[in-house]
Amino acid sequence: MSATPDVGRLYVIPERSGTAFRLGAGQRLTVIDPKGSQVSDLLAYNADDLDEVISSGRTLDYAETIRLTTGHKLYSNRSKVMLEIVEDVVGLHDFLLTPCSYETFDHFYPDLPRHRGCFGNLAEALDPYGVTAAQIPVAFNCFMNVPVDAQTGKLSVLPPISKAGDFVTFQAHMNLIIGMTACSAPASNGGSFKPIHYRVE
Ligand SMILES: [Zn+2]
Image (cartoon, rainbow, N blue to C red; front, side, top):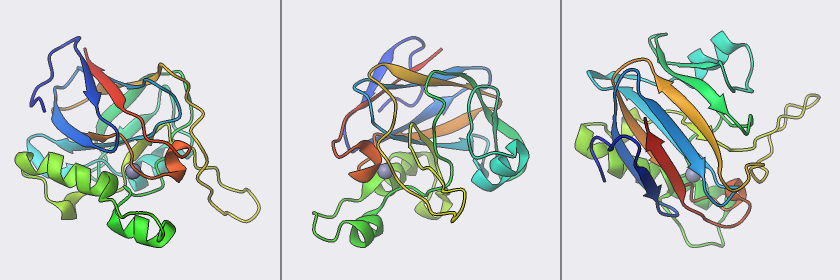
């Protein structure tokens, strides 16, 4: 774990794990899918006030779409811009579903070994920064493919369309604590678990 990532260095989040680090205002965070079809849950907290946190509801309201890509801003619960998507070669991410957890495995995969999932990985990674599990909201799920049926509203979780080396880049609009994972849920990642890479510039 690195509290403040070295600029330009490539970091690896091993499969089914998570990390947390500081991202300064103006810095850019690039999230890379090195092998393809792998989700990364991303959280952001105001580094100076942890009660300010990334908000799916605010963001979708202001964006007027669930298809967030280059040019869209990710808002906090206080309607401030936390991150802006400045480059996105995939164009398909999810901001509807909450991080996978032990309970997710009980619900969807009762026959598989339980895993604490992104929720447990984020809780552990963010704990040294003072973030509690109760402060974990819906994450911005990089590369997650969750189509919504236009007629019925039914959600599906399909394999990500991201290919090896695909990435999405965010610019920080305030000093942030970032939490990130390589997602642990079978359906979200096309049935296999891969690492996630990231870089700060
Ligand atoms: Zn997950």
